[in-house]
Length: 332
Image 1 (cartoon, rainbow, N blue to C red):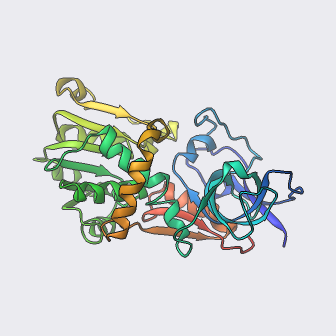
Image 2 (cartoon, rainbow, N blue to C red):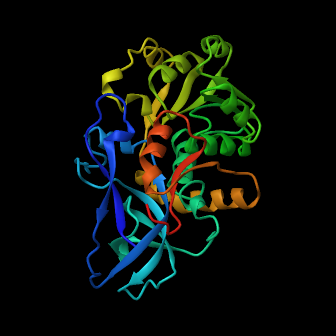
């Protein structure tokens, strides 16, 4: 079987498009001592990758045209030259969007649960779930009885945040794009309300809301619209700003002064800077999943050939829940 990978073919002009990527053949060198050959089964599609696509670094790492896209993945060990891993082991790590790749075994985490649902290790029980938990409990410091607004409510992190908020005794108001997504938020996800930001009455629907906490995944006009609904001394956990990745479409804020006037705490964070809380977060998330109190939707792009389309669809807000490339050992 010929191996293939997805590369960034060119920098986007305006919005990210499918033509900005290409699937190309790749040769895999023989394994060195301490390495493993991994075949990804699930590859994570994440909004922050657009930052690199536009040419800006993420935690000091840049992406140049011609280089492979990289993100977290769950896969199966095909071959190993390290005693800690054996063929057939399920592992999680960061790697290229590639049918198979070699990687130092020390950079992989062996997984012993949910072999039949590996995508959960990239969503509710992966970085997305931990990011949601840390933002809610450590950054926003949510308390029972508070009102919580969540933008990107049916996305991976937003949907988990809302469910965790409900589990913690909060009133949860979601913001999503379209009536169908809002119905999903109030139905399957259990939000009290969901506001459609594409509706002409979106601004009016925010009137009368007094929220102590806002979890921000989008930024731009949505954050601007929500600021008047935050109470004095409210807290905003700034997790994502997908609306700002394309800097050619910058939003001019009108309500930013409310941060000062109402002494609102706006706190950006990186989940990697809260490593001390990761174990507790994973225990709580696992308990919630096992109790049936936390679900996660997944939108799959099947095969490497569909990876670019899945990535673009996610950035356009068309996906539900976590966007993932599903390979299962198939060719591109």
